[in-house]
Length: 385
Image 1 (cartoon, rainbow, N blue to C red):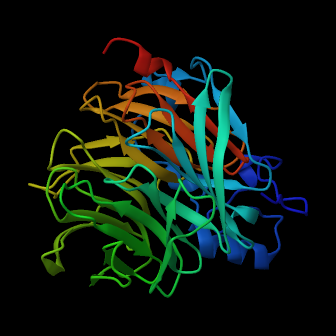
Image 2: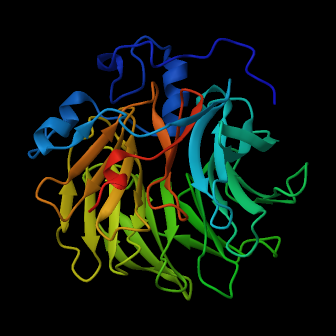
């Protein structure tokens, strides 16, 4: 795997106060700022976080810092992490989608990692000619994955083979930022969300998309299947809405004006078919009951920059995690008066990828622009509920 041959632009070397809502670095040239925004969306200024409520771990009674047990870390020079996902089949196997130059230019690399007693080891890597922004495992083949990239394509990979991809699906006209494989038995469906404002439905055995869903009025950052309702998925967009769709109809079922800011991520609760969470540029997480979407059922405050990814726990009905451009990963229990359980601060750049293991109730993986991938056990998940 080739490493970047030029010194990468480092955001960790800059004070956080230099990161503005209109771009990433005030010292960066206007062209760099423009490209960064086009690929990664806006960031809030400090004034955007002046919402009422609890702020930070001290106010919320949560634990601060990376107090987790042994942290397994793999450094990948020249590759900046965008997404991480545990295998649903093989304990300890992790896929990570990465990009050169923060996803602005250059190639992308899909990394397949395994855990052992000494830490993380690279099992296999696959390069693509543009940055890779998301990854999802097949639900019926332990070796197969799908990634999506900045050139508007999806790629199908087989980890049992040394080279790839097996197939490329190119229909989106702009960056594809999200991809998810349906968990419904008996079907092979993948959903993708793009900056071209469309969602596409795919069967990986078919060379073209099955359907295109239109309705969002801005870029789509997140698409996720319901783990409960066959053929139902959610999408989150820069148009500030969360939308619920049914593959039986090309029209949207529910539109939720979830934030007054761009929404970068959404996820379904694993224990409640009506409950979703959204994370947005306004630094908040909000929970939504689809039976009544007039107002959120919970709001979680504490992040100081945009919430990049949100994930519900597969083991605890009211526990979820979030990662942010504030470099932190935070763990929450929305059923508690003080919902913030723990803040993990072990990255030095924007934290973009996050997943909770389906095999272990305590294990978490994340990745960031600091060229590191980490697997660890947060203290809050190792203690009795």
